[in-house]
Length: 494
Image (tube, rainbow, N blue to C red; front, side, top):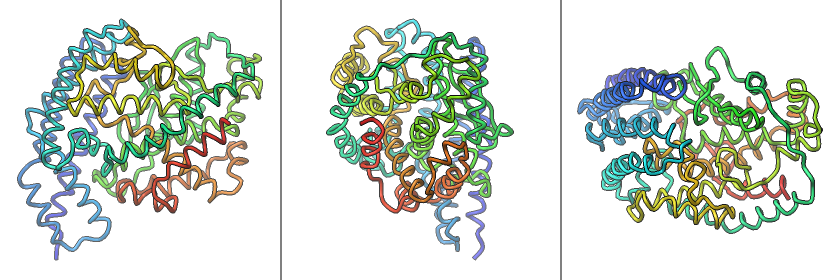
């Protein structure tokens, strides 16, 4: 039997991927380069593109091709691609065009205003825009939940992390909650015994940028297919052939920007190594947001904060910024592995990081399920920050509930990916270490070839061919096991 219907679908998705490419680069430009006056027009242009992609994807003909393609004689790869095509089609078909356009416009408006509202600590201005974003997100969640027979929040979670549920998250995060407060307390107490010396700035931004580029090069970033820029919130965007990563600099703080770059380079290497043999097809996309975060946290935490890698990094820091006591090897390693609960998620150490994520997960789930309203967020945030990390954010919206970009464009359901990603990263690093004897020595010598080959073979090259559960089973020999994350933290910090 010929594959006429399947080939019609692949042509349609190739066309969609080209529009997505343009949208992605226009979004990157909006975050990194666009002058403030361009905001409204860019928002309208991106909304128009969202509607166009939605129209192509939800055309009745696409549904018919999918139904007919199921009867065609497809090989394993084609069947996996058809499964992903159908998933994308069904996700889109549940939403009316008017909602897609309204969400795109509201998200652009909220995000653009947030850039000035956050530094100004302007919760009143921000919350007015956020209310519209939440209203539309709830409408989307209601439509998806009705079709899928699940809770509104689970319907949004499924977009980012297919097959994950809040019941499973409660189980995984409940486990973390049972041991994290004690581990956090013990790690802080242990480190209070050692007097650490803080690096003394200023650290010129031009030198910080060069250091970041040097780290990207060591980590195998392909500069022929990507670049590094600056934005209000670090991110990785673009497309596999043209990956854009950003960081933000502070002259008085050396390591935040550097490890932001290392984190985003993990995302970028995954994107740059996704399969090119299925151009424009959903099977060639990254598996899920948690798998994406597993790659960035693999780079930043498992590899980047390891003693072997930090020792490798130390001479490059001295070369650029000169000798100082803080850069002596023992202090430098200890400083980069210090546990210090703070306000800002993206700067958090890996022990306190899950607290930031679980806090956001609990708030956004209650918000989407209609148990709380936008006006309740600051109070709840403060309450949870005090309980988890002993910090008050009362009146401090800038470093509290306004610090992240995710909610501005309706990205509810994304935050759990970070801690799921940390769990996957720990499990993957354990599997890599088992498969590659002498890995720590190789890292210390700056030879990351075998490690990156292992990631390419086990994660990167598969795109969305397998479900998340199958991908992890294939790579590590078992299902997601949060104990690897727990053991990793115990080993490194206690």
